[in-house]
Length: 320
Image (tube, rainbow, N blue to C red; front, side, top):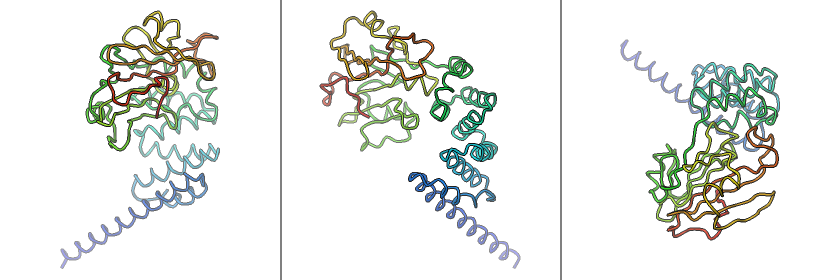
């Protein structure tokens, strides 16, 4: 009899637990739909009941969603409090840590903001979008403490021009190999490219031909510099600070030179097995300290297979 009672209680607990899980999943789906439509007050209303949930993961989800909603409403103090709760529950999750860094900075606590920022860098965080593309972005990026930390934890992103390789993958490799090397969450062949972004800003794109072979690689050097600790490094000695003059000195005269909008300049070299295209232009403000006034440093890099069936006649064009 006692055994039957225990089993009945256990079954009841499992049923209740399943119901609670479904409840927060439904609320989360509705809140994310509301957020997409910028209905942030609705997000707060939907997720607030889960602030006192028994499960710590549910409390984390509620705090993170509520914090983001307040953040987008420009109410940084309640957002900060919500992110403090989220970080206490899961200090290992970079996104909420960066939101806490952001609210600290926006509320004037620069010391705490930089401490969080350094810890994220030390732990190997790569996507720093939330740390810098915020209200007050220019001030943050020009802060000497921020610049010093980014310089201290900078990592080279090496491009081998002879083999056409980047991040351990080569032009012509099949999609599965590339996805594995990049630790990509998706290798869906219906999508032409594997991309990495800092929020809405493209960092790099690996694009495949109809046979699922790596056809081209695009790296947005400026976004890489602004939003991650990576620094572009080419095998011939060029790096993210390259200008048209230094590129010509290292690579020789380009096969094609084109001017674009906003005083941009695109140069293309026909190297063995690939086309190399570098775009140069005035950097977005604030101007990086290594870029003197009047210079036009590298904005983006493209490597494209010359034997590809889908090679573009316009090597200066960048597809996402």
